[in-house]
Image (tube, rainbow, N blue to C red):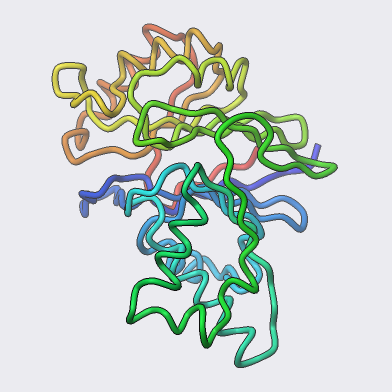
Length: 266
């Protein structure tokens, strides 16, 4: 089985926590062979990838957006300009395959064609020549001979959650979500579940996100083997052990709290 590296570029929310460990806007990537799959692309993702010595003109090859809140997609603009400018100045053309829920075409057109100060992106840089867009809400998203991505709608602003099956390993990613057992169905028996955990307790949760008690229930129902917590709000700071214990007590699975630049090999 080929070794894959999973890197978390952002593990916080719209309100980052600047203390150690740092947690900021959502994004993680998986590199395997010639493919680099990026899930969400919050502010600062491109700079963090460059800091990791990743050539952002070539990687990611595929971008999967869970929903269109800024902390999950703002660097879509940054990455697209980098690719479009590389083509214009240096003749380097690398397609960016972008997948997202309903509204992806409208969102892209608004950004690159209808924001007056940015319309040069479409007119001069021909950004749409390098963008390969596909809207997806349910079922198969895309696949190759070695990996497949599927999705299902989730309870959070018309978003989706994703499942990646790759080299015999299954990974499910929540994006942002309230309690919704659809992810347990999509991610059944997943080896790794990357789940948002915005608040440390049910009493503090605002309803549009997940807390440890709810994650425990979903992990148990989906039979997730290993849960990685991400998208933590500042309220979680210093309470990580308490959160992990709550989930383990319910689901009896391995649990890790991620932080920016956290990496694992699978």
